Image: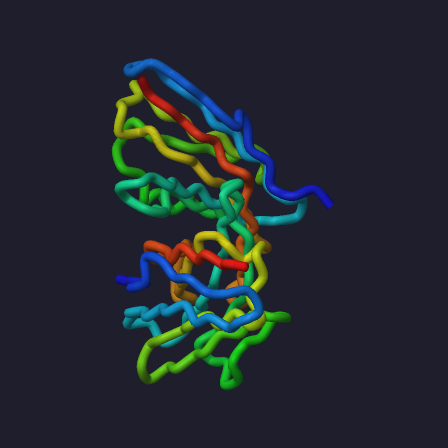
Length: 115
Length: 115
């Protein structure tokens, strides 16, 4: 079946502009996660959605970052007024949402470059 | 808070030999899961193996096995009969079962398999 998909695969933007990154999770997966991978910070958790529960936003680095998940499926990560330090690969993952053996399946990522 | 430590930035192994990638973790949770992911140069994160804190037996998946020593808080990955295609970054990660299911990653180990 189809895996996690993300779009765009690459995004180049100018400092100060807003960007939207999209994630389509695996059908039937109730949990969705956003991570960021950068050279300086490694792999960092950003935000987590589980069903209809309030999302865990504890990893968002600033209020310029926000995410939503519509209809329990597709998610959009929005970065407002982008800064050069936002340049990274943004990874989305989804899982069945159980409490054990909760393997997360990752998408190919969106490489964001802020000039 | 949870923490994963991978002390080997790079490892070299010859084809067909076995290699061990080290991972230690720190958590105050009683129930947790440990994961290994492989990231080839293409950038995708590929799930390899999972170990639950309550599992008494070490996990195995084909050529991958996880050497789980709970008292020492270590979860080393053993790759047997290395192949050229095993050259990649390897990340150890953990999640707690007591709260949200985010993954906490180590800094990774780059494995190079030579012919």
